[in-house]
Length: 212
Image (cartoon, rainbow, N blue to C red):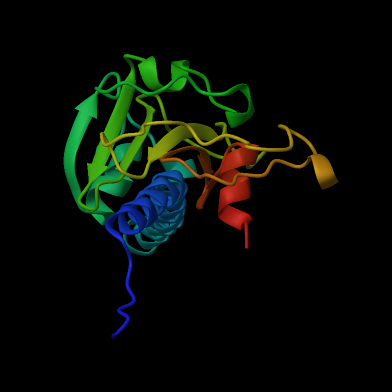
């Protein structure tokens, strides 16, 4: 008499059930990590592309963000990016979509996204750059009239999650073991810009940019 070995139907169903439960528990974490890596890459790309646009404008038109004057034709702040980057749409006023209320550690406030006196540039790669219409003469040079300007970058435009990056551990202004850590980057980053420089403008945004 020959013995046959195999799995019963009950054993197969139990195994499939266990696999399903494990997959349901791990997939959200895996997706968040994948999205976070994409946001981080897009953020670095946006800062690099915008910085290159300013440098190119200096080379071709001989003025940077400190020299912008919105009352002078051809020297408006907005022209630097419209002339040097592929802008597919320009919007005035609020962003036009809802941003989740920023966490206190983000360095941003709802005012950054709800002001009626804003310009938003949408680039061909999906990135949005929003800043006050009054942005001009953006400088930290004490010998010039003007101040550093502030805005935000949304690395995927209107697509969700539309959430300002925040510290997942540590705290705003913390150092050492208490320094801000971002384990799950999101899609909106506060920035500060002046002269030929564009930098992150919050602990969380800096943590994402400089993290290894």
